[in-house]
Amino acid sequence: MAVQVLTDSTSYISKEIKEELNIRMVSLSLSFGSDSIREVDIDNDLFYKKMDSYGIPTSSQPSIGELYNEMLAVIEKGDSLCCIFLSSEMSGTFSTGQLVKEMVLEKHKNARIEIIDSRSNSMQLGLAVIMAAREAKANKTLEEVKEAALENIQRSRFLFIPENLKYLKKGGRIGGASALIGDLFGIIPILTVENGITTVVTKVRTKKKAVLSMIDIMLDNISKYGLGEVIIHHINCLDEAKELAQLIKEKLKVNIDIIAIGPVIGLHVGPGTIGIVYYTQKALR
Image: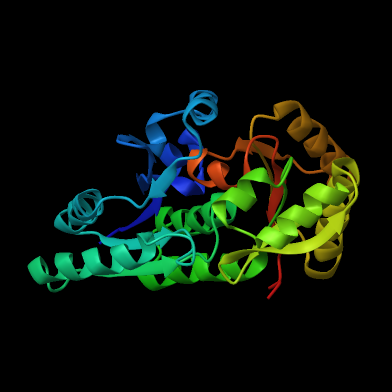
């Protein structure tokens, strides 16, 4: 019996890695009024054009039907399944996954399915998925695949900087007062996802200083806990992402992938957002 890995579209894992590691995916959706679009079916350029025209959309978790079909396909093949989803504090995907697991178990009582709350999103979620999928490809047990994901969650961090606070304020992801203070004084926050929610690490006067401070935080973590892998995230600011990747590459002498954050997470932080996802050799938390 093999182990398969299932995640959701907010992991933003590249097509090449998904294919290489046989990672399955369900998609969250976006709604502009009555117009609903699966996240995997719209790119950032079109998404932000629509958002300029129609305002900030709402997002919704994958449908029960899509989750059920994905899980059932794995179980009916005779494999076991490890599901790793975005933070339960940010979406109902995790809880719906648990519900669907029970539906599958009603039909296949001996099915082996694990559901993991990543407590994050984007490539912090993605790295946990990749670690699990690597173990699955190496023919490890379901317990070993699950443990690989959980260990990576304890060793990873997602730091990011929004271009401005407009989207965070409208989306309610940080307090309104904090957003107003930031706008008034030109303060740029360095944000992270901790305990499943977006929190402020520190505030800096300019985006340039914020980027340098973000690098310093990462380097301090690496000096204490060792280095695993590093990924640069961005939303419609590829040149900035390349500059950031080069700065880090000069310091760490490692290859760094650059990956865009998609619409579901992007609608909360907006274009111009840039960030770093990394994991360490020892636990950060």
